[in-house]
Image 1 (cartoon, rainbow, N blue to C red):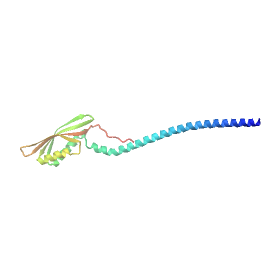
Image 2: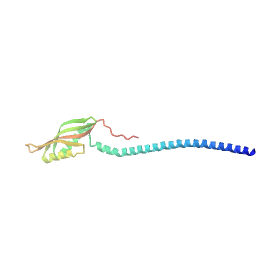
Image 3: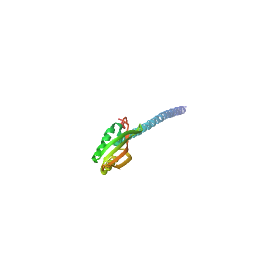
Image 4: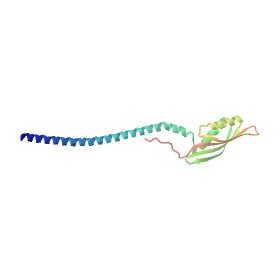
Length: 177
């Protein structure tokens, strides 16, 4: 009888130990799942932060390039200084230049300026002025060109140029803090 009591107590202790082990195993397994989920979230947030930092550094690198590209376009508020620049180029070539007309074409988000110009001087001066205007550091193209010789032994050229422009309200890319 004493042996069966010892056997029953041992069996009871084994059942208690196994049920305690099962309970703690389930609790630890649930916590492991929660920890794995948190680790996945941390990894995803770290990757996102890395992509954000990479995008910010890329934007910082191209900010200077954006400013350089914007210099090739004439803002709507800078037409007078652009015309003055063209006149200065003509006077450097010893030619006289007049602006016959200025108009705006294109869509509001991508406007272009169309200028009609008249250049007078020697053949060399007129052609050098046309070249200086054509190769000026702007987004411009010569759409019409007419050269003729006058009786006063001077040459005249009339040309129409199309210049890329930016709207007056255009803003550049801002770097976010």
